[in-house]
Image (tube, rainbow, N blue to C red):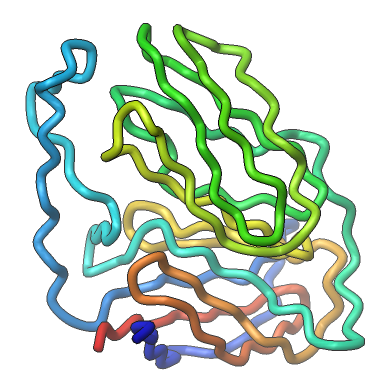
Amino acid sequence: MKTRVWLSALALAASVTTCAMADITGTVKLDGKAPEAKPIDTSSVQGCKHDKPILDEKVVVGKDNGLANVVVSIKKEEGQDLPGDAPKQPGVLDQKGCQYVPHVIAVMVGQPVVAKNSDPLLHNVHTQPEKNTPDNIAEPNIDEKGKKLKVPTDAEYYHVKCDVHPWMSAWIAVIDNPFFAVSDADGKFAIPTKGLKDGKYTLHVWQEKYGEQDMPVEVKGGNATADVKVKPS
């Protein structure tokens, strides 16, 4: 049974500011005790050894229970116009220290995606989408330029793994509009609102372990705040 995220708005307020940049800002927090991050033993691979064990990244909690790696986006409702072209600059997924970095990236439909390899050893990038065309690309050595993955054509969240090192895991979020962000190490996020009309919208929140949920947000003067709680059941 799919675990569901229960979200409660700590604050849903909008304010006009004199700042030139307009954003939907907020913090995603885990409403409860964070699960203990399990260490991953990479010592069997010479090039993957770390001074300290790397940790599973399904749930990463920072300052004040801020929840990292959460994708927050405006949900495109039927008949709703959310204008914006796909960025030409690619979303970048690196392989560093036998981990995918960052753990979660978000791109727009039609935006290029590049996979780099910062390690002097073999990795492969094996994407597992349901709607988009998958990739299974080997990178046998350091590849700073990176290899182009297939450009996503449909919105979805999909897993990425390395078949050589099975603990390596990442996610790519493909969003159907330009209004999205990924929360940082302390759960903070900022969605640029350039081109977004003032009004009431639905904010969609996704986290790989706790699932997804919607909440309302109102944009005024290009700005809004939307602080969110994620309550594991």
